[in-house]
Amino acid sequence: MQKVERQKHKDRKRRRLTGVLLCALLLVICVTVGFLMRDKAEKTAAEAKVRYEAQTGNIFLRDESELKSLTLIQQGKDPWTVERDAEGNLRLLHEETGEPSSWTVDENIAELLMSVATNLTYEDVFAEKRSEWEGAEEAFGLKDPLVTAVFSFQDGKDVTVHIGKSADPENSSYYYMSVDGDERLYAVSAGITEDLNTEQTLLHPVPRLEIQSALLDRISVKNADGSVRKEWRLQGDVKDQDAAENWQLTAPFTYPADYNSIVNLKDNAGNLRLGVFVDKANEETLKIYGFEEPSAILEFHTAAGSTGTVGMSGVFDVSDWEEHLYTLTIGGRKSEMSSYILYEDSIYSISDFTMSAFLNVEPTSTVARYVVTIPLTSLENAVVEKQGQETVSYVLEPVENAGNGEEVTGEKYRCLKNGVEIPYETFEAAWDRLLTVTVSGKLSQEYKPTNVHTKYTFRTVSGRTHVLELSDLDQMHDLVTLDGASRFYLIKDGMTELP
Image (spheres, rainbow, N blue to C red):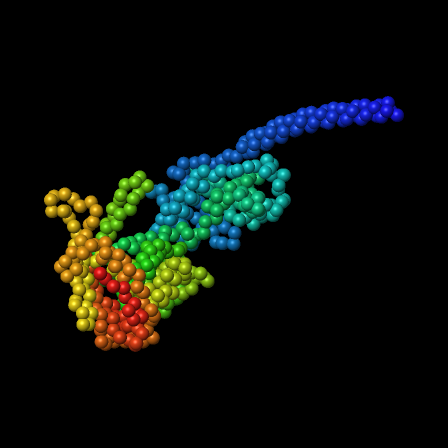
């Protein structure tokens, strides 16, 4: 029995060894086949790449001076033609008379059109012979093309191309294209398709408003009759060191404006852009586009001055600007998200979103909620008067030198309290706390201050004076009167103390 068992054990070893050898052989075969398949795949991909690259090319390549005109027939729209003038500019030809427009095509649009009109390329060739695709034009969108372009050159040669639907619906990266007199069916890039499908309304140049936010000194929203609906004005000069803090809401009531709100209004004014040109303004068009009763009139007044920007080369460029009044009159609705706007002698479209910053803002939301609005860098002196107490005067003086000709490297200012110097840091810390005090609420009606118990008089580095008065409103609150205007109240003893 023992021998039989040993014999079975040997058979098991032999079978296991045979299995291992078979597995090893299969592994070698798999690896070999894998390498062969990979080599074949790489070779096929390389061949396909060569074939694809070989299919790209030019329909034509011309110099700009050779172009005479470009006609575009866009699906569902009237055809239009631009012609190159003697100076190399593109001008739109009048549909009926064929006369060129008095204006030249927008510079950016003209550059795109000229690029396509002098160098039309294709990305691939789907078919070499017309017989391979003729009769199936509808499948390629060529029966009713998305756009047909006719390129006319000075030598009398015309090239007509038709662009159909996307050949790659998921990505829309290229479109079907045919060329008159050419048997092939091409693929053209989405970029060229978009350029040739440019809206005619985009051809007319649109002026840049160039409202310099740094030079703004008045922003007004008026009614159709010219009466002021809401308005913000700079109190002082745009060149003042503290100009940014000296804005005031002047309509529908008067009160110092909030710094951040003014920054937002000025930034939005500087970013205003007109949409597309609609028509020249005349008696008929003004009526058509809703300017008989404008919904609003916006005015932006900028003072004369200079602004500077750092160019791409790192050079600081300075531009000088004259005093200017920008007037934008808002007419009827163009769409759900845009309106017609009159600027100078033309009518344009404009996005409602860009106008909302001025038309939809509540004046009350733009006034200062802080009781003291003067940053320390703008303060020259402060006087505090309280009933039954000594008047306290604080004067800030710049420290130019230490008296021995040596420059001061640390403290830049010193503070005098009633003529006696106190630590500037102490006053600075107290002023920072004072700047955090906000009003407790808004008044339902305007009150006249009576029994003023505390008065602050602030004089700024630009020579302006601001007066803050606190008077009894009720047992728990003080009426806040800032520069003569009373709109808010403050809880009793809500002011922090100066040293």
